[in-house]
Length: 93
Image (cartoon, rainbow, N blue to C red; front, side, top):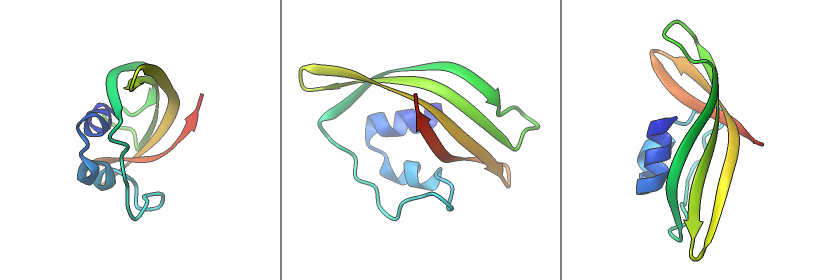
């Protein structure tokens, strides 16, 4: 989760696509350069431990777009395959 937030903050599209599960990954991804991600709050985690094959992370990601600030509040589902975690999908909260 934190690596994907950092990838959004730094515009690392390659990392985002690489860590997105193939079943839900878009073919291309364009990030909005006017959005500046400023803070990540991890609110809850279910699963996602050393011996788990899936997990859910609830978070708030704060951003600024020009003079406006906003928050993306989401529960993201992750799955581990071959020892690597992949983002599957998320639900806005």
